[in-house]
Each structure stands twice: as C-alpha cells, then as structure tokens.
Image (cartoon, rainbow, N blue to C red; front, top):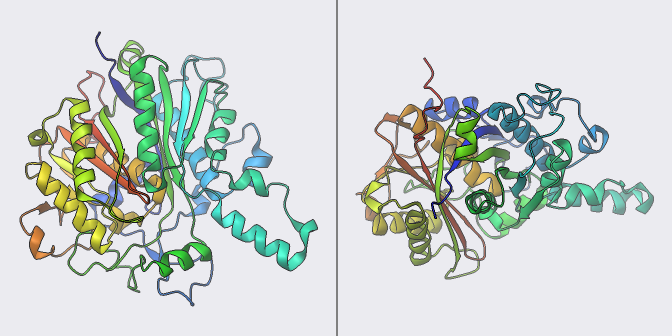
Length: 426
C-alpha cells in the first residue's frame, strides 16, 4: 500500500524577529538579533537580563468567536491563535467556502485536526495569580486564571476559532513538544485518519519564576550584550537566552493539496521521537544519533543525503557538544546551523520555528547563519557550521528538538516536488 505524502501548504509565525514567516527569514539571513533587555519585568536580581520577546503590538487578532475570552488568555494562547490564522490564510484551504476570505474563516473542511506542542503553558499566569491572591486576597483571583494556564488552551482556542470539531491533541514533551506535535500530525495524515491538520508549537514564559528556576540550574547565559549572546556552538558559549514565539503550519495530504491546486512550501518526509538521557536535563549523544537515524529511515533518506541540519543548539555548553557529536557520528558533513542566536530559546516553539526556517532555506536554496558563532570547540573543528548566510543546493533538511527527561525528536523536511511549489521571491 502506497504511503500518503504530507506537504506544508500554510505557515504562520510570530517571534522576536517579526510576525510573519517572511520577517523571520529576513531577520535570519541578514543576521539580525531579536535579543534585547527584558521588558516584561525588572530582571535586576538575575544573572541573565536579556530575552527575545515578541512585540505584542504586532499580535492583533481579527474579530472572531470568543474574542472576550481569548484576549484574557496567556500570551502563548494568543501567539498560537495568531500563527494559526496566518497558516490558514496562507494555505487557502477555506477558499470557495461560504464567507471565505474572512479571518477567521467560517469553518474549514472536515477530516482535519489540531496538534500543538506546549511545554510550560501559562506559567506567567500562574505566577501572577499566586501573587495577586497573596497580596489582594482570594476574591481578586481572575475567573480566567485556570483556562489561561492549562497547556491545551492554545489548541482548544484554535479549534474553537476555526470551527474544527475533529481531533485535537496537545503534546507536552518539554522542549521537543512542538516537533512531536508536527510529527504526530504527519503520522495522522499518512495513516488516512486526517486529511489536513494545523500543527506546531507555542511558548511565552518570560517571567521571574522562569529566570529563577533556570538560573538555579546554571542554564542561563550571563552575557549582558545582546550582540554577543547566546552563542550556539561557539567555544565561548555559556548558556541560553529565554525567547518567546509560535509557529503553526497547515499540513495536508499531498494528493488533496494537488487536487485543489495548493501552493506547496515543502514536504514533511520523516519523523522519529525517542527517550534516553544520561541525566535528567542532559542530552545523550547515542540516543540523539538513534533518533536522527530513525527519522531518516522513516523518510527513506540516506544520512549522506542530508544537506543541512537546523539544530537544537541553544548555546548550552554540554548540550551543544552532545548534538554536534551526534551529527558527526551519523551524517556526512552537512552544513549545520542554529537560529537561537537570533530568536533565543523558545521551548516548545523551537522545532516549529526551525521548520519555518528550513522551509524557506529549501525555497531559496540558502542556509541562514549561526548568529554570534565565531569558532567551535577544537573537537568539532571539522564540522561545517554556518557562520554566514550562504547559497547552496538543498534537498533535505534535518530538524532537531530535545527536552528535559531525555525526550528527543527529529523531523526530515524535503524540497517540494509538486508542480505547485512556492516560487522564490524576485
């Protein structure tokens, strides 16, 4: 039985580099950093005082169902809604339906679903709710507190806003969540259970408790210059910088997309996820090798055919080294890059934002640079890490995302073969 192919026909992005996939790509290839001093609270008591924050003024939702409630939700819900609206509009899936062209549309075809990754959900809402209760009393607790903090609310909000009544799934696999959500959506479409799906990840946890917790783990960069930190893969890297964002995609059965004449951004060709770590928060090279290898096997792509790796690479000393060791062990000298120097570390949105970058890399046949990277550790001097944007032939990109507890996920995205591919910009 021939396996269904899964293509990407819509993309929506919001992050510190902008509020569209195009703005993300422009920021990446021109070497612009979205890292700046924290503005959401006074970070003076912390070692890390930087963040890659979303410009909230750009996250404007068009009128639609449940507006009153959604405007009072945590930022991760609003970012996911905003990105999902973009993805639907970009896909044209609602074209020809009654009232088509409105945002949100009056509804989408049946046999769809929502698959979203969220790691920490409404952590800022939890912190604010506790402080409000303690300082102002129980009666001052917002009735929107609980709906605002639960991780599934982003997927639920997307389903409610777009009239999706079929499958809805929230995955909370730490920082691999968004990558896993994309993979599970791909599997559902391949199996025939779904014809299309909105899938991706969202996160917004720029709040004191986040900084307190990660500082205690010595995970945050101590750098105070946004132009020099975080430094993925660099020999002077010293930790991550907290980022915010969301990326949501319209995935579709390739035959269905072709039949309706849809533009195709690229093909999700392979996925794997596994477990295994040497300690609770570390990355295990052997398990990452196995995860990447299984994703390639799922895609039917040989290790030597991988042209580019959009890496997890957060700027952590041990984590970056473990990932590079895995790449060196399995693959045949692909170019390796990381977007974290531009966007910060966006937790559940890591994998989806990497997918957005990889799709545009395949479209333009160009690799974005690893911003702030100058020189690798001597042990990895032979690995081709992109220090500058470059033109190169790209057929297949590998995307990695790893989470606490030994959760690993890898995706293979391939250049679209459909005659309805997205053209390169003039």
